[in-house]
Length: 76
Image 1 (tube, rainbow, N blue to C red):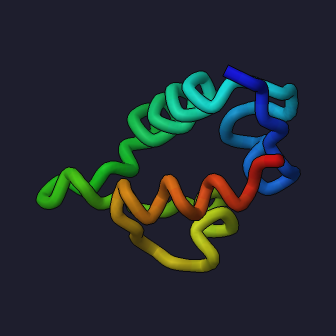
Image 2: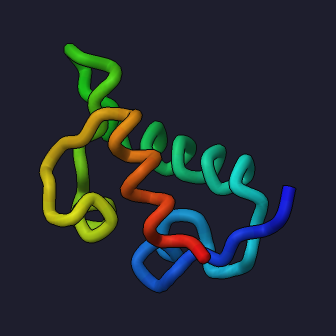
């Protein structure tokens, strides 16, 4: 896959170097799991910490599916 470049908002989560979208997704999920951000009751929802809130347009919680669309706005 062609590498994508994370922007400044996404870099603290996945790093600032270009990487394939598949690797970006792996790193994003590793960050979510490491910080316990997956909702305990509804596993399809992701709770935002301060870093992810910037990516999630200020929302405290988004679904997995919305997260993909929001993250794609932060890569070029």
